[in-house]
Image (cartoon, rainbow, N blue to C red; front, side):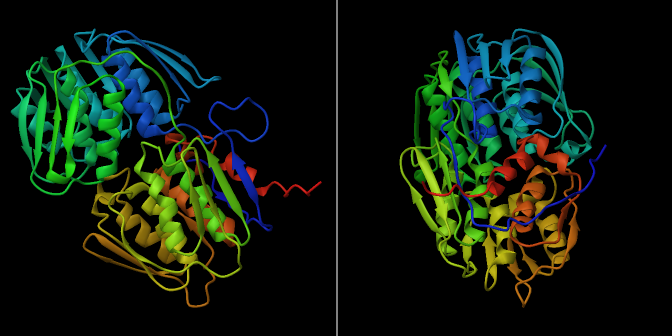
Length: 450
């Protein structure tokens, strides 16, 4: 059932906030929670590894709990400690323990895509299902290459979409040639099972990769778990050799996509500053590039190995930009909402994959930004946002379409100007259950020197 609407109250004073290191002692402002993308990848790799893995900094949210529940349904032993954000996974060296399972995956895209591939390693029958929106999210671009490798996968409703039934009898591996896909998660799903295949996996890409940084994230993480990989993505090839995975103690970084909202607020509210520890130039997440986009819009941006900082030092408005943001599609939503506060139009190019996310984000963005007084046009995979002529939004209630990023991205506008109400704010539970509590840390009065 949708939650009650929440009106966002503007921040009335500059703020200077530092979110601490993920291993900082308790008390005071907490760290930004762990990355969903890394959490769900690490959970799966730990399950496929030989030996025990201990994951710290784990995100506990709807999407990650879905993944943990599904792995347990498949027979993996998992010990969770939500208080310490720690999970211990006892890996089964590339084997799926149970021979039969029905997995209820909600609207968790990573869980659906990654487990579709992983279940093909088993020997038995597995059904993967989700909420009605998941039945609208295409998956043929993953199912077809798995079938080329020998998988037996049946569509239980509409061809090309979940729910699925997998008649698993193991996979040998081999070579694939793949056209550009709607989602990078299809590529990541294949790469993650590569080390468990008898012949490994070679993928030749016949065109550019969608959201390439997420593919690079996957390759780096599977290497950390001991996989033997070789890639030249510039030449459109990735090779994963038969090596298996080894259990690993691994600390998960803060979620760069979720950090974008706080960095955006610092850029939009004059004389404010936000510093995020444990998220720097060594990050595995492509969304660390978000700070550079804010810099192009006029904010100050600093990054080093271990932290990122964005600040606004003047009262002047941000400026509109024209950029291809295919590499950071989630954080690009924050730019789309921030654009209504900027001076001049903003065009975000090459984000057609918004249409196959938790909702059709292209249509949702156009509808909701228009409510606030922006002029919004969509041309193919590009979206242009022209702010209201006077720079002031029209008060409106924002529909979120059961999409966490709609709620969080539009909340940034409400921090800067009055008049934003978020319908169904609890949809943030998908990846950031305490998001609105974290906004409160930006409202704390600045500490007087001395």
